Length: 321
Ligand SMILES: Nc1nc2c(ncn2[C@@H]2O[C@H](COP(=O)(O)OP(=O)(O)OP(=O)(O)O)[C@@H](O)[C@H]2O)c(=O)[nH]1
Image 1 (cartoon, rainbow, N blue to C red):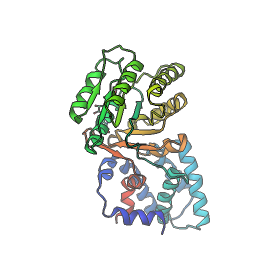
Image 2: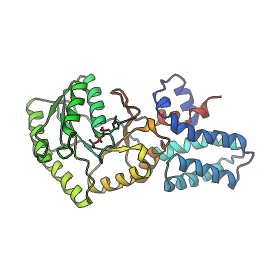
Image 3: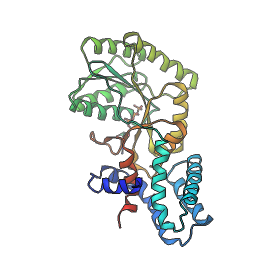
Image 4: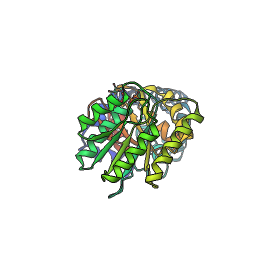
């Protein structure tokens, strides 16, 4: 059974959070279905139009070109003649592009009976605070003892904003005066977390994208102070990217990946954009796994990333008559 048919069977009974959240991206990719139904032959015209649609979904030029090359190969190998048959091949190739013959794990690294530190990085306004709040809410619901850390001491209002989310999620927060050294805030929070047996520390950081050297130094210092108390932490450094920024988001991924050891991506605001293809570009260009996606502003709207649900959300039109 091909991946396409497996997906089809599996998702018939699935809840459609992804489908709702990805409706804008699906509209762009919906043109694909039309194209494959209207065209009579697989020719260069069809490839051009296909390429254009994928680029419009913000899959990114480099990723689209690599995708098209793989697609052409598959068409050849399988001697595909009918445009309609391409639906299945396209979906399968999207999987291959994301998985790249690896097991990609979205779940955050978590160890029982340890303080698990998750550091959140990313530029201002991408949805870091909101994502920390949403994740805190989920972890708390799972019965974990969670401490938020207000490590963004630069931006006016950042501490208060995180405080609001801590109250909403019903978890504790560690904070100091605005302007305090962020590393000292994190260090003191870690000491508290160890002493009071917290399961998870969610640490916010400032979203300043200064020059790369400064960014690197700042993040290195944070890692250093965490390791003083907890040598195996942070277990995750999560880069938060706003999906609506498209190619700009990819640039941020490049800079942060060079500056620090990013372990995964939280992609926010996918509900507000037709640029859902950015998931594939992030994975293809930076080899980073997507851990969570933001599909709305409410506290429940952060969802563990699942490539099958995601592809189904984008291409459900393919699966329905
Ligand atoms: N529609 C939608 N909006 C989101 C999502 N995630 C965050 N937002 C909104 O994006 C805006 C910015 O989010 P913040 O959490 O304040 O951003 P931030 O990264 O913390 O910003 P800084 O504190 O400046 O670094 C808020 O209005 C959020 O409600 C999402 O998944 N979907």
